[in-house]
Picture 1 (spheres, rainbow, N blue to C red):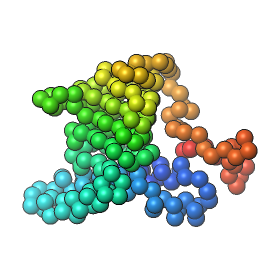
Picture 2 (cartoon, rainbow, N blue to C red):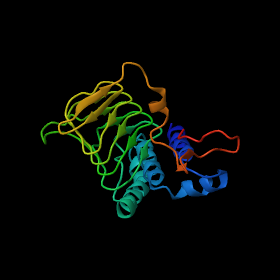
Picture 3 (cartoon, rainbow, N blue to C red):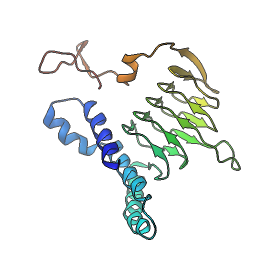
Picture 4 (cartoon, rainbow, N blue to C red):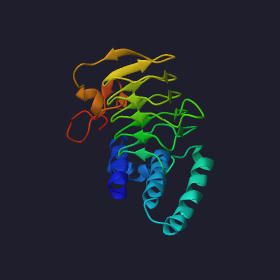
Length: 211
């Protein structure tokens, strides 16, 4: 499982990098999002072992977590459940509660907070699949974020969100809810590089888009 999820993280970031094969192969090793997610995958995996083996294996995880916080001001708690294909657009100041569950192919911006609403209430949000969380968004309390939801920048989500919705404001409200799946939105979380008003094309003459 650790290798499958890590491979999914790498593949999704790789598909969203511009340039040719050689450039993307070299560039992917410099992506902070990948560094943070791989450290999380390791820590989440070794917690399955029985003590004292898990304690020994968690020592490198602790050191790597400290390094991630120094370099990127970000770390993902190993107790959290995060699906494959996670992308951190900007790694600064992201807080995720250890009990949080996040689905597959989610995108998280900088300064995002996902946690409990009260000190004496340990319930936390559950994030669905293909969710885009904009910079500065706050998702608080025992709520469910539906699949394919877009949460706008600085939105504060305090209630359950429907699937295929766009949430903005404080508190966040749905400004758009799609009745049918939008494949274009599901498969591409942002436009690809544009030059002279035209989409970049690959060697076969087809426009390049994310994923």
